[in-house]
Amino acid sequence: MIKKIVFVVERLSTGGAERVVAALANEICEINNYEAYVITYHPKEQKEYYITPKVKRIVLKKPNGGRWKTIYHRYQQLKKVIYEINPYCVFSLAIPKTDAVLLMALKNRKFPLIISERNDPARFPAEKSMKLLRNFVYKRCEGLVYQTSGAKDYFSNIVKCKSTIICNPITSTLPKRYEGKRDHRIVNFCRIEPQKNLKLAIDAFNLIRNEFPDYTLEFYGDGSQKPELEKYVGNLQLGNRVIFHGYSPSIHKEIIKASLFVSTSDYEGISNSMLEAMAIGLPTICTDCPPGGPKSVISNGINGVLVPVGDTEKLADAMRMVLKNEPMQIDMSKKASLLSESLKPSVIAKEWLNFADEVRR
Image 1: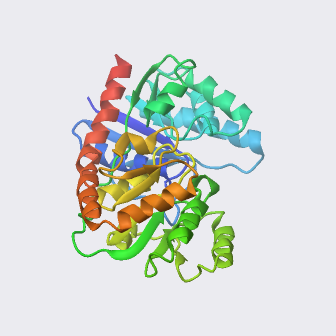
Image 2: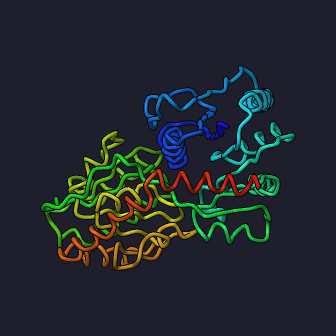
């Protein structure tokens, strides 16, 4: 019997949940007796994660009209599309409002609805009404996938359904670890939003700028905070030392020779850019942000370095320590790159499918 696995996500453009859906759907299609479907609310966009032709993608139509008409139309489409597929399991990696509509559409389901928590549940969503809606949905689904034990602990008194912790997969197309002389560049790639606290990286770099006069700090990505940060860099007279490149479709090739990857988020489900940077062997420093994504993969001082959230001095100290110690860089690089095996898509996809089997029992 063919097991049909349905993923629901807002879109397939750049973002952590979207990258995970693409990786899992692509991998599941290569497993005997499985089919993967991806349902999105948004049509195909210019910058999207690749899905193979084997993945059946369904785009819901957006009607003309107000908010309630849109919600009702989505409800009707989800109900029709998913029941026609008759899936083995539905995984949702969407937002609370989408999950609520999905839950209503599938109220008579004979298959499990499994929802994945993708952020720090204490901080996101910020609105109390959305938190209440999220909790309402989580109490009524059959399973929950968390990225960290911290996220799972947050819901321990709220939901009682089956749950599991699964880390994000790392794409199998990443380049191999670079073993040559590293460029004098400190890098990050992410959405340029307040949550990422890139100002912390800029301030720490400003503290060490004179000790490392030939180093640059370089950001890849776009976002709402980019103009503000560019102005901030100008005020610090760092314009030629701190560079904003924008989004790059070949980001891993762009950064693989860098000396250091620095992630400074205030909170994060688990950073895909951190995982990918480590997998390609970049020495990595990351804030020990809630709900515990970085510390779930970084053994401090061994395959990476953890620093307190928001601490400019500690981040600057960690950057000095790594940049001045080439043997440490090499050893850290080798150990970090081992993630590429333990988190490869084939391993992580089986964990998701095994959980679906467990929930259906």
